[in-house]
Length: 403
Image (cartoon, rainbow, N blue to C red; front, side, top):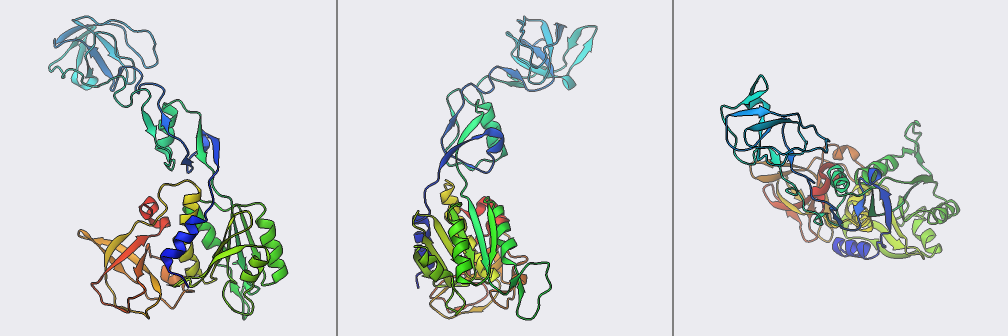
């Protein structure tokens, strides 16, 4: 049995390499940028008006009006002292103008502009290159692309971007006793909570699932399923059948397919039986415990970090915070406990509340939690007021979860 830190290191060291692909700009959101993006022009590319108003030169209080300057109009005029030109937001500032008077601060009578107060030089003008100079880097490789990044890339002249491909993912739930969610359970059967749970958790993490399959606890069925999936995806994730019961066939089936298992058990609760390995082509394979809370914790602690590294993300280690617990807790030494908690701010510090739970199958205890607190291997007793390390779930705190 290995430590959680060693387990994560093994997972990340065997994550595989991301592939660089080209995608159209309007399809690039959520991908990770594989190269730097530099602007090919100054931004803005010309001196432009930031407001609807009048372009003027100097500090007079009376101006003769010329023709209006509209946005998108390439024709320019030269503005001399004593003259003003109506100008629209985004229109090029005419040569000779040194400030823009907004409409609300002006008065026009018979084609003459009158000002009670003259704005300072440069007022309401966006100067050429004041946002970005041509050749300047606007986006750095490793950036996970959001909407504002795509707007910047468009402004920098890009129609396509080099990005790291998202890993193709297959999920398999196992168990002869597991039935679809809409069926009424008979004695000895349970509804499949793991499949929608995993699909949602991975999708919210930015990794939509490509294939989802359920298999009975039968070695031949499992082997055929795993063998087929490993031919068409990059990462295989299996839930259930990984312990040492007489019907837990997943480890032996994976070994029959020449999967090298680097991890079999981890010193943690929940989720002690945890398989991780690589198939002969280097493809990562996870075998997660079947209890839903164990699945949630395993995906958060190991699967999402691997997927983020495989997708080119710069941050794939959990960002650690510290908070004061509001509960007492006892445990046996030897395993790190992931405590599902509600993390909330009180003044300038974090407080951690631990809902009551009946075990790793109790999904009700996770309904309002947003984080996992870490009770270390050597911890035996915790008293309310103690400080614990914790980190957020990706689904509740987004990029705050990773550093």
